[in-house]
Image 1 (cartoon, rainbow, N blue to C red):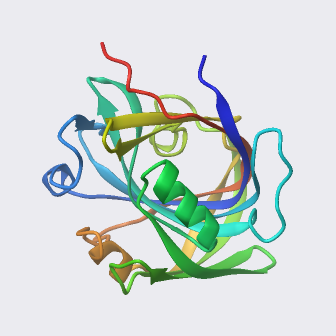
Image 2 (image 1 turned 90 degrees about the vertical axis):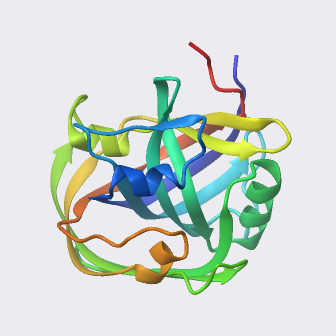
Image 3 (image 1 turned 60 degrees about the vertical axis):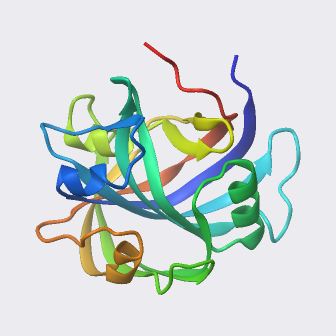
Length: 236
C-alpha cells in the first residue's frame, strides 16, 4: 500500500488550457511517456492557485512555511498506454523551503517566485514572477472573473480530461522515471472568464508557444489533498 506522506489544501485554482502541436510537446517529454490526448489533440495547462496548511502527515503545519502561491505549467501523459497523469514543465512557488524540498526529494522542476492574489467580489488578479533559479524572466499575470457553478466534471468530457488528474511523473535520478499519486474529492467547478492573460515569458522559458486561439478556462474553489509517496510506474 502506498503511503500518504503529506497533506495540502489547494484553493482558488484557475485551470487554463490551449491546444499545442503534439510534435512540439513530444520533444519536451521523456521518451518513456506517451502524450495523452483528447480526441487526438494535445494540450498545455497553466494552473495558478494557492496552497495552505502544507505539512507532513501527522505533524502540524509550520507558520511561514505552509502557505504559499504556486503556478503549474504542464501537459498530459500516459505510461505504456495506462496510468494517465501529468508531466510538469515548471512549478513556480512563493515558498523557498517548499521549492528546495521538492527539488531535493521529488526532483520536480520547482522555481522560487514572488506572487500575490487580490480579490474584488467575483474578480481575482493573480501575479507571479520567478526569482531563482533560471530560466528568467518567467512571469504570469492573469485577471479573471468566476461564474456559475458547474458541479463536478463528467467522465469522458474535456473538462474531466483537464482537471481530474491524480498522478504525476518525475525523472528521479538515479532511479529514473517515478510516479506519485494525490488523493482528493472531485473538483467543484465554476465557469471562469479571463479578462487579462500575460504569460509569454513563462512559456518561452520552457520552449512552449503561447495560445493562438481560445483559452479554455475553469475555476475551482479548491480541494483537500493527500500526497502519496513516489513509486515506480505500473507496467502492463
